[in-house]
Structure formats: C-alpha cells, structure tokens
Amino acid sequence: MAKLLTTSEPLWADKFSTEIDAYQTFAATPPPVSVPALVAADDRDHVLLIEHIRGRSPVPGRDRFPPRALSPAHVTAILTALTHLGRWRPPAGAFTRTPDYLARLGRDHHHGLTTPQEHRILTDLFHQAGTVLVPGHGDPLVTNFVVRPDGQVVVIDWEHAGHYLPGHDLAVVWITLAATPKARFQIEELVAAEPPRVRAAFAMNRAMLLVRELRNHRALPPSPWRDERVAAIGRDWQAVRELLLTG
Image (cartoon, rainbow, N blue to C red; front, side, top):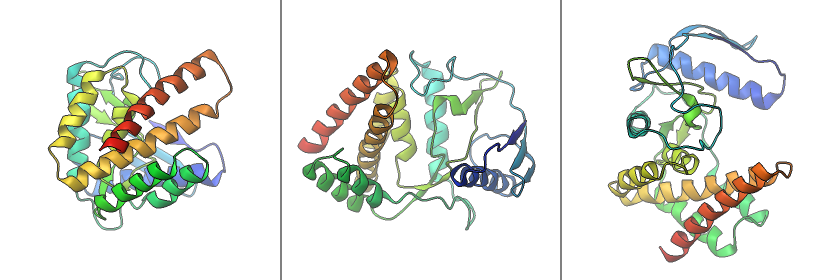
C-alpha cells in the first residue's frame, strides 16, 4: 500500500513524518501489537510504502463515532492492543510527539469551554498524574483497526503516534464508542485497577478530549447530523463534569 502526501501544509507534513518515524521504529524494534510491515519510506518526498492488510474494519463505514455497537471480541482485541502498546518501551528518540497538556487546558479555559472550577480540577489531575509518559497511538478510532480473516487485529494510521499520559488512548476509545456501552464499562474496569496516578491521568484525558470533540463539532456547519452529535457529546461532557465536581 502506498501513502503519498498531497499537500505542502506544515501540519500534515509533520504528521506524515511522524507516521514514517513510527514505521521505521517498528521495523527496528517490533511493537507488541500487529502493524503493517514497512516496505520503503522517503520523508523528503513524503512517500510511504507499507504492507497491504487483508481484512475489514470492526464496523462498516468511516464514522468517527460508530453508530452501532462493536462485537465483544473486537472491543477486547482493541483494548488488549492498546494496553500492550502502553506497556511497550520503544527505543530512545522514537515516538517524540508529546502533548502540552497545560497549554491545552489553558486554551480551553481561555475560550470559555471550562469554568474556573473545572480548569482548577483538571490542572490538579494533571499534577496528580505525574510525569511518566507512555507510548500511544494517539488517535485509536475504530477505523484505525483492521480485522484480518483469522481474527487478528492490526493497528494502522500512526500519524499521531507519541508519548502521552496513561489512559489517553483508552479515553479516545471511551469517547468514540458511545454506542458500545459495554466497551465503556470495560475501560472503566481497566482504569479502576490501576494506581491513583493512572486514574487521574485517564480522568484528565477523558475530560480534555471530550472538550476537544465538543469544540470541533460545534465548529462544523449547522446540520441535523452535527446538532445530534453535539448534543450526544454534550451529554457525555455533562456526565463527566459531574464526576469531576463530585469526585
């Protein structure tokens, strides 16, 4: 499979370079998850050749928020892959993308997306989470997983790969699998079994990413689909806000 960058925008060039770096890292140090094999890469001309994976998405379509529930087997496979990835130790100098959490929290507060109390709570959770970062996919949407004919799950599209506070990838899955309540329950069970710093990191990640989703969807042109999605994300954000304020 060939991937070719068709824009000169620095943002997308940077993401393309991140994906090339990820596949080169995987070729030198195999990760604990299944990924396409690297064939060749040219970062100067923005070309990436990787193994073509025969298989299908866990759900039909390309919706960021799958409208129907995933099968329990697919949920377990995805969560297992992300858990293994978070415990991996890539070589030094790999997966260099790292979010500026405090800057993101400050920006959201500045734009009125969080109240002073919520901003204070999220900042406290950030400090409780500590400084230990773990490797993550960065954008583990269901569409970034391919199920082979033998049932094995392969993880694709690594342009957001980097080091994150624990729970980032699980928070993305929690948010996007709103139509799969059992997935949310499994994620919450996994997090509950972790040390306090990991629980704090997940709580902060989930809140911060929900605010991002709400901001991004509100910026879309008005439509019935957009209004329905904003309402659904808003309900999740309200539930998470209540947990933050009472927790």
